[in-house]
Amino acid sequence: MNLNQISVPARDIKASIAFYRRLGLTLIVETQIYARFELPDGEATMSLHKTDAALGEEGIYVYFECADLDARVKALQTEGIVFENEPEDQRWLWREAWLKDPAGNWLCLYLAGENRKNPPWRITE
Image (cartoon, rainbow, N blue to C red; front, side):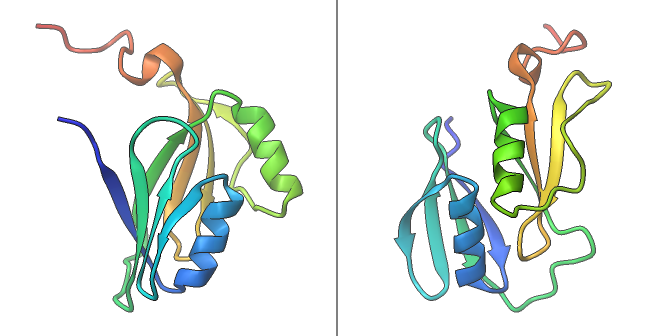
């Protein structure tokens, strides 16, 4: 099985498209209610779908791994992207920086390396 795409809700599709393009995603499909992006690395894609529904207090969580996390966060900050926190080492061995998209969905830019899929506490059969 291979992950094809993640789709996230967007209240203002144009604002969300602009935001994700600023993050470095490449727009490959755009309609009035839908947009799809290629990511700089890997085969999975990400899409936006327009909604007027309530998104809840927390929205959803999307994680993007960045080999150059600290430099990428600094570059995005100089472009006006606001982060909730600077990159920070976590006890689960990931380095994370959090921000929100225009619809209020949480995004985590992180660096985990080998610990992404193989942390020391991974279950083995």
